[in-house]
Length: 452
Image (cartoon, rainbow, N blue to C red):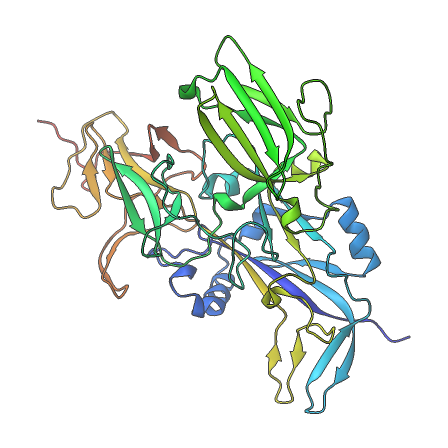
């Protein structure tokens, strides 16, 4: 009996800046037209890989789907690929094409949980630290809340909002459409231009269990909170109210509970992994604080909270979606992978999840509390008002040791210097709106101490 032929149905690449940055501060995002060569070089050089930090897991319902359709998930250097059994056919021009033995229904969820092996990936990912809800990244090829452009699975990055309190490293789009990274220096807000686009951002932090804890910001001094959950049409389907004589710190929200604390209990909540991935699964959670301040967040529910434990992200791919560029099959039901008569391969879809690494000011501290001398002409370091020296700009965490560089508008290095890197990228200090990575240094010619 002949064996079954498998061909790639699609691939997901996790392009994380932490793992794809060179020592001269160039990254894969500097020129994505050369992505394949960059990834091949990093693989050949045996650079650390994001896949080393992740377990790719299938929830029980998705395991059944994979078994029923005889799909295979294979981890790769930058993510994973899914293969499907096929029959080979030949077109009139000699092109080899492949028809799946069993075609997936358009609404089937091929949902993969990215579970953390340790704390490193969470620590080096550019993500807001102070959050009201424990939402997990949710990436999909369906347009559900904000437009995306093939091959990116991340939602669009919001325009700058003057009423929003940004954290260091958060991304926004300016009035000219350029991507910027926010930071504070000397109590003044600044921004850095960001190369590339389509990065994971707060609009992708959507997935929550049906029961979770909402955390209030201390300075709001909340003694009354009204919680309203609305569906995709704007209809309110749940309303709760919480009061306290003392400021509320956190509050458990249980959307499974139809008890007396729900003022308006109606309409079943649609949730993953069984719900259809469309606008119908996106809800708006509105929290009104003390009858004045109102916070609104988009969320998607997942039934089965254990699936979100130790979860960094969930990726959900559907066979057929609203944007045909993201489909897994062509109009004739064939997979998109094929081989031309001249041997040229037309590949299966390669979806990308682009992730910025966390940015922090590098702070150099003398190991004996001495006052480090500062070179007034330094392009890289400045005094921070104490005995320490701090990088002039926040620096992106990277797996490889990184130099300080100055580059011209063409990307050519005009000045460079190697200084000690943080011992651990997992340890950061947060002071006000600034994030630091502290580096202890001994007195030396590189770090002289002011003895005057």
